[in-house]
Image (cartoon, rainbow, N blue to C red):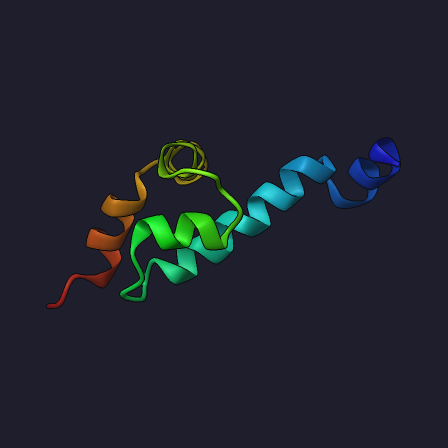
Length: 73
C-alpha cells in the first residue's frame, strides 16, 4: 500500500496526512483561536510537537506565521 500510495501521490501516507494537518493549522492560525487549541484540533498532543512540525514545514513558528499574516496595515 505504501509504495503504491507514494507512487501515485508523491508522498508517503504519513507525510501526506502531516501535510494536510499542517495546511489546516495554517488556515486556523488566521483566526483568533489559541495556538494550543489549533494544535489539539489538528491532532497534535502538545504545542511543542505542533510547533516543531509547523516550523519544519513552513520555515517559521506558528506564532511568527500568525504575526506575519494577520498584521493589520
